[in-house]
Structures are given as structure tokens and as C-alpha cells.
Image 1 (spheres, protein in one colour):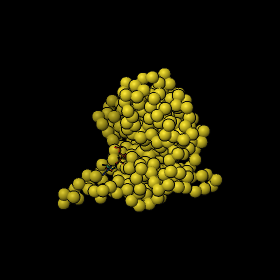
Image 2 (cartoon, rainbow, N blue to C red):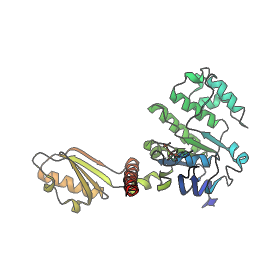
Image 3 (cartoon, rainbow, N blue to C red):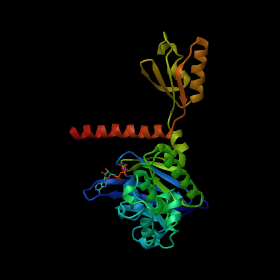
Image 4 (tube, helix red, strand yellow):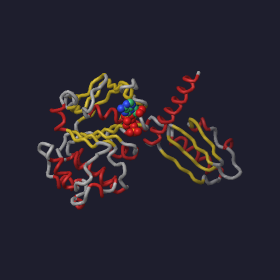
Length: 321
Ligand SMILES: Nc1ncnc2c1ncn2[C@@H]1O[C@H](COP(=O)(O)OP(=O)(O)OP(=O)(O)O)[C@@H](O)[C@H]1O
């Protein structure tokens, strides 16, 4: 549990989850999360994020493999693990007739050592809505109430399942700030999200799930480093692709042409950009719509999603044969 002085609060080993009908939603995944780390689970729809998080929360037993939270099994030792964790589910489902404050008080009654309900509402910027009925809250405000309730027990580990879905840009930023504050205070956070920007901004490390397996993992920088960078520009009037310097010599791995727009992929961004700009300078032409960018997490993710779609198409063909 202790590696190089870093305590692993969450340890997942060869985890599998097979549903009743025999469908294997989680196919032997392993990862660990250190104390005070934010770890993001990303994946396409149906990749197995919620199926995994439910096992971490102890809501169901794994079919195979192991989950340990503080060294305990969250399913069989729920009484030990649950008081130290906070859970924000995708759908909170509170009684809608209660007010926000009543809901927080009711929830606090179920939690040992809860922080004052109004303090929890204050953390998520909902204190001014304390007397409003839950049914009158906007979707974004409900997500904040979900988060406030997850924070009531001052959890050491926080599970956030798509915490910012439905929030506007400002609300999302505020939630990110809060997650960072909690992390800086030593809280370990495991979050699932569909927002790649969220993972890029918040996560110390992440894993991209694809059909129940981990397709890529590491820091956001490590995951994106595996992807090529891109250069795009408009071919000047009267010029053709063949007029450019040989693309292979510029370190270009591949290219696409759409009308006059050219997109290049390269792992040697500086060499490719310098070669291209040097050519333009010499030819005395302006490269309109020039865009030079390092790979982003979005590209890494889309690369995996494209591969997923291609594999699914192959599966269908094999099935049809
Ligand atoms: N109770 C269940 N019985 C059978 N299959 C299920 C059950 N729950 C989920 N699945 C299937 O397991 C797979 C993984 O679902 P899961 O909800 O874990 O994915 P996810 O990554 O959280 O997806 P999303 O991003 O859409 O929320 C999906 O194919 C889903 O249809």
C-alpha cells in the first residue's frame, strides 16, 4: 500500500465486472490512486466508468479481482470504509418537496461527524438557496447540492461521477476550484467525466477506458505525448501539395487535404513548422489560417474513440461472416 513514501488510498487489481446476462463491462483493469491525488476515469459512452466506480464505492462485489480503499474491501467492509468516503452519484434523487437546507440537515443526520449543513452548502455556493425547494433548483444547482451532500462527512476519499454535468462555464470553474482546494487539503478524488478539458485541468493522473479495458493511462501530459501534433494551413492560390518541400523530410507522418486546407500530423513539431515556414518565406507566400498545435487530451481521446469505432465495425463484419 506504501510505495516510495506515497500511500495508495485506492488500489484496483485485475478488476472484472460481468453483469447478469453475461456481459463483461469491466475487463481486468488495474490502477492505484495516492492520497491527495485527483484521478480521472475517462471513456466513451458505455466504456465501463460507472460500472467501475460502483465497485470502488462498494455498491456491488467484483466478479473477479480486487478493490482496496484504505486497505479495506469497500463491499465486505463497508462499515469501515463508507464513513471515510463521500459519494456524488450521477443522479442524486432527493425528495423534491424538501428545501435545500432540510435536505442537507436530513443527510447530515445519517453521517457521523458531519460538518454543519450550511457550511457544506457554502462550499458549493448554495447557501443563498437554502430555503428553496429542491424541485425548484436548476439542473446545475442540483449537481451542486449533490456535491455538498458528498462533502458533509468531511471525506478522505471523494468519488465524483460526472460532477459538472449541467453546470454552466462559471459553475464548472467554481467546482474545479473547490476540487483543487479539497485535493490541496489532502482529500483523494476519483472522478469520471465526459469533459476532457476538466480532466486536463484537474487530474494529476487519468485512465481512458475503452470497452472495459484501460486504453491509456498516466499524467495528462504523458497521455497526450503519445499523440502526434498538428499543423494546418491554406495552400496559397496557384500552389499545390507537390510544391511543398517533401513532407517526409519535414518529419510529417501523414496529411489530409480538404479543398485548399491542408492538415499535417507530426511528432517533430518544431522541425515540420520550421521547414514549412522557411519554404513559405522563400516562396514569398502567406500561409492563411495557419494553426500549429501540440496534441491535446482531446486528440488522444478521439484517437482511442476512432479506434473503438473501427474495431466495432470489424466485430460486426466478423459476426456477419
Ligand atoms: N445492470 C446492467 N446490466 C447489464 N449491462 C449493463 C448494466 N449496467 C451497465 N451495463 C452495460 O455495461 C457497459 C458499461 O456501462 P457503464 O454505465 O459502466 O459505462 P459508462 O462508461 O459509465 O458510460 P456513460 O459514459 O454512458 O455513463 C455498457 O455497455 C452498459 O450497457
